[in-house]
Length: 81
Image 1 (spheres, rainbow, N blue to C red):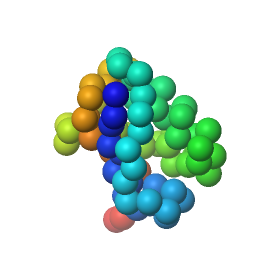
Image 2 (cartoon, rainbow, N blue to C red):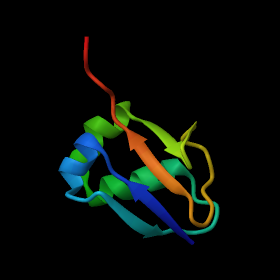
Image 3 (spheres, helix red, strand yellow):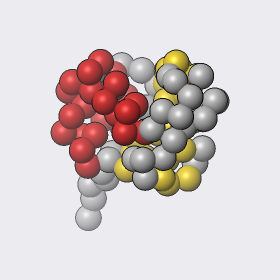
């Protein structure tokens, strides 16, 4: 199945992409996609550890199973004050 990953902030800087389509097995979890992305982009490790994730614009846990055409976003921690 195909899922869309959109990249923002540090994720975009490291990957050099705004988004990409990944082909994964039906029922793949976000945790598994994280592993795949860290294999592909090892520099994401420190950011990925502190990021939250959203599927189809709603926050979800890493154990969430993905479905065809889901949009996955990793949201890096925000600084400010």
